[in-house]
Amino acid sequence: MEKVLVTGGSGYIAQHCIAELLKKGYSVKTSLRSENREAEVRQAIANEVDAKNNLEFCKLDLMEDEGWDSAVSGCTYVMHVASPLIDTAPDDENEIIEPAKQGLLRALKSSIKNDVKRFIMTSSFSAIGYGHDKEVFDETHWTDHTKNIGAYNKSKAIAEKAMWSHLESLGESKKIEAVSINPTLVVGPSLSDDIGTSNIFIQRMLDGSYPIIPQMHFGWVTVKDTARAHVEAMTNPNANGKRFILAEKCMWMSDMNKLLRENGYTKAPSLKAPNFLMKLLGMFSKEVGAISGFVGKTKFTNSENAKNILKFNFESADEGIIQTAQQLERLGLIKK
Image (cartoon, rainbow, N blue to C red; front, side, top):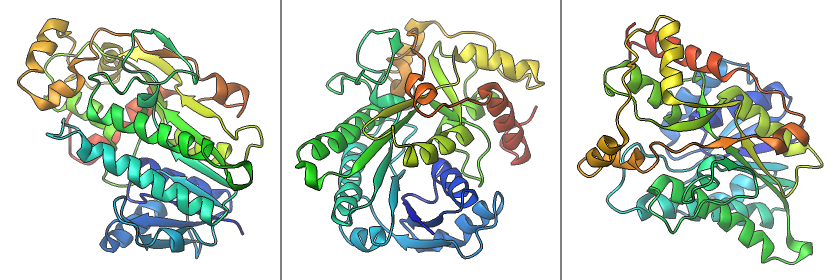
């Protein structure tokens, strides 16, 4: 039985990746920053699949060297999903950029040292679609991280570039296979009470945090499709060296709110925030500042690599949004 290391096992996407791997017959080792969370993660995975004896845990820190080589040893594949997440702008952007980059390099170098078959990085559309004025994006595009685009977007672009640059610096005999998965906003129910960063947009639209709608345009993909793409890209012989944007559809946040209202979530606001107001508020609020630079800009993408190489058929992102709202309601985080 082939073993896969999945870093960041307490995370939203990572848990779905673990469940998908177990369903496909792989053995999984996953990392946590704190071993105290093992029971929590085991329960989350059990909500989706019986792991039997095929799930084990190790302790890793993105900013510490200790443990990486032993964690990777014996694994055929490595999925590096762990990455620092924020919902407000940090005082120092390096608080998120450095852990993202250094953690990626630790995972990659240990994978090379242990001769894993393929390294799968969870990157993001944030590494593709920011810092320039394009309206339609594909896998050849790169975010300009020299622009004022927010610490999270910078961290994803810098970390992914670090992966490809490091591999390019090696001789052919030392290279390992690698792919990056670049999802847009990921929606759909969590396997645990950690609802995921993208789903916070939905929560805040429904709990009164945002009485008006920022005019922001995103791609959307379900978390189950995101996990499935990780696993398919892990073994597809034509995926090596490729990036995979994941987006089932692209739409404005106002379209998302309309969908929510049509499904009984009447607290979803319908009034659109003027773009100038968001930019003004961003000067006084770190949370608004993290998104104010992106209002009024379209972000279309077509996911060609996923469709043509992985032969991917996406499930409905609309369904994922509604299922997220239903989970938020069950958890008592929102009310209709």
